[in-house]
Image 1: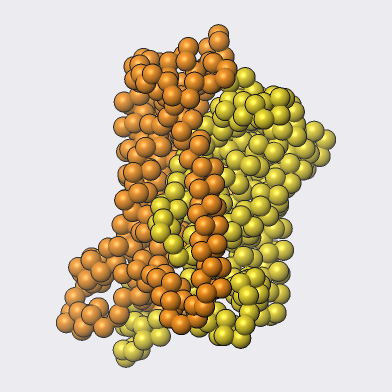
Image 2: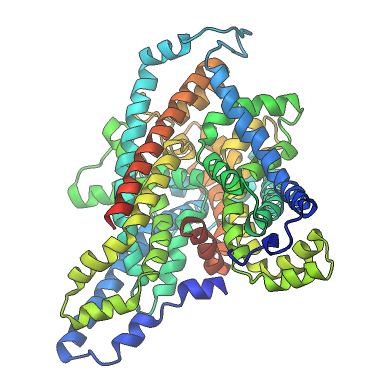
Amino acid sequence: MTSTKLFNTEQPGASKRSGFSTEGYKLGKRVNVSLYYFCLIIFSLIILIPFYWLVKSALSNQEQILKSPPIYFPNPTLENFGILSEQVPLVRFITNSLIFSIFSALISVFISFLAAYAFARIQIKGSGLLQLLLVLSMSLPEIALIIPLYRILALLKMLDSLVGLILVLSSVLAPFTVWVLISFIKQVPYEIEEAAIIDGASILQVIFQIVMPVTAPGLVTMLVINFINGWNNLLYPLTFASTEKAKTLSVGITYIFFARAPWGLPWNLVSTLGITMVIPVVILVMFSQRAIVAGLTRGAIK
Amino acid sequence: MQDSALTKDRASSRWERRRIITFAALVAPVFIFRLITAAYPILNTIWLSFTNMSMLNQTNEFVGFANYVQMTKDPAVRSGIGFTVGYVLVSTALQLVLGLLVALMLNASYRGRGFGRAVNLIPWAIPTIVAAYAFRWLLDDQFGLIPQWIFQITGHRPVIFISPFGAQSAVILVNVWKNVPFMAIIFLAGLQGVPLDLYEAAKVDGSNTWQRFWYITLPLVMPLVVTMSLFFVVWQLANFDLVYGLTYGGPGTATVTLALRIFQEGMLFYKFGYASAISVALLLLVGLVGLIGLVINRKVEINL
């Protein structure tokens, strides 16, 4: 519902056709449209060329990659995946990345949903101040907190563990998630909840049986956004994970990069791992483009 | 919000107390998380910056402002502050202009716009570290695609990561590539909020496209521009992944950012005290930008 509201932009075309179209105006419009296409093509090329380069390098062998001028369309080979899984515990990294991002998304959305409900529906003194504090905590640079976090995790025996990583990231993702979910909840009419409360429903029943189903689109949106954030996160696994027990793909790719071979950097392997990391998020984006945009803009525009 | 909640009901003190308890119970998880992983760490960072805590030297004493004095003499930190500020300002300016242009392109109506919008999300969605390596490889002086094309056109093969200027430009360009889409998404939503009758009225009055952009679109998205630049500046000041992957601070210390320096001192050399002092410098920088942003924000609001 939200996404349709934000993005039904059929208006310009529709209204343009309705009367102002003199000959000169039409011509101007045609020129305009081809200008748009020209820009769109340039824009898409700038965005897609790095991907072409990654895919091409991932499908080339070591010899094909070190050619100047480059081979634009190599004989595709999948041998890099084999070499890669010999050099790093690829399956382990993928599993860790999935566990890290899925659980961070679930936990952050769950706790944020509870808080967002309180902020949206229960008016008490100081609620505004708490919201402000939450938003301010979002602007703290993560890197500036990394040393105390390291020490806290060490104290809790959670260094080098996925649990520690998940807890830290869930907390980091929470403020933005609360912020977005508040606006999703406020959009739901209060009457149904009110009726349920009068009928004697408990607060948890109201939240989980009435509010959760109707705000499901918002929750899914934030799950997707937070999953992507977790999948892409480098800082926490890089600083807190010391063995392959908790290392993720993002740390794995820095390994490959820093493991210099005699002939230079193993770009075919870096590219292969890069593609492995990119494909899931690109698929996710293609399927939930509107939901993601709705969530991101909710955070920025009240 | 107005018709909200339990306010309508009798304000008996028992009811009131129950509401407060419910509220507290619901926000407690998030706030406990934030207390442990944000509030305490920030205070702890400030405290540590006055100590010489080091995991390797096994020291942990109060040293006053010694770390800060050392910092002013540390060439890597000094150039780090300069480059951090410079790259963030240049990046943000470019992102604002290009973000608005991309948003205008994605807001116009023509077939294929949906494709553009989908493509636009990709740089936002992919891991920064992968983008950094992809461009490092794309710009590789021997086998990279871009230097090859430049060579074919000009007959001269640029060596990007050897020169400070080349490396610094690369950091800025990749940063712009990665973040313009996000800026464009926000601007697009802002553009869609501009009432269409304004354009129609202006069209009837005989305005041209440029005038409509300058006198209607721009003033209306201006508050958004200010908010977004503030957000982007604060956020990019602390960015770590990009420089870590693309240049690792090189050549020399030409592209060292404060974030990278904190990571190196803290997590590679385990000088917790010194790294904390740099963290405090970064925090002050973020706070300063926040203040400036708030002042500008207020001015823009008044002008409207």
